[in-house]
Length: 153
Image 1 (cartoon, rainbow, N blue to C red):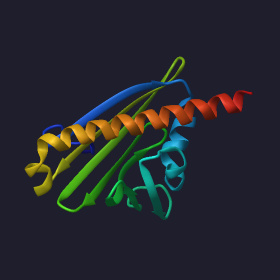
Image 2: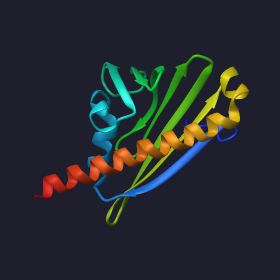
Image 3: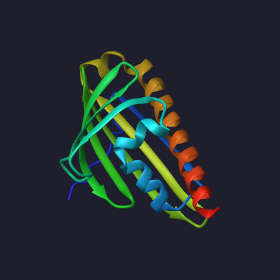
């Protein structure tokens, strides 16, 4: 079976990683509760999932001035979720990989952009994408660690 993931050779590609001091199930539940993203990730203004979190499910969301239509391409709870996305002139592939560690969860997020706009504006988009992944990962870490400590109290 062909692995579905971000394309490292795309005109625009970025990857970020972090350790989160929360169990993998806490991180996974936050990441896959799409409708609640705007509550913990300030860069997501709107999020609407059509159906359940499963392969083929579509979700529409807004970040900044971009409206994105995404589709879940692969899911292996609680370890991996991959979705594709479309916006004007860009085709994206975004993968999240979670690994349980002794004191929490290691999270890797990577995304690639292809298409005319990605090719034309590759250099500035690489920085924009890397910054966006870092921001999203930081928001996920902050919320997961907050929720894990809340459940322990």
